[in-house]
Image (cartoon, rainbow, N blue to C red; front, side):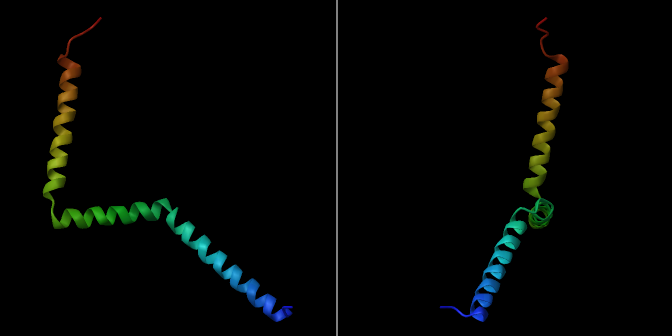
Length: 78
């Protein structure tokens, strides 16, 4: 049979484990914190090698200009 002090100690351990688990879940689901970490990772990657980012930006610009030109000068199917 457990003593009251032993039961209290077990309950406290269970509460501590639950609090730890809830903190871990909250940390994983904290969108602003995750977005900030992702931004920092992107900045570090850009500082190490900006070429892929420049190529990606140019590719997006070319596609945007192409879609705009197609919309303006493309065939009218009225």
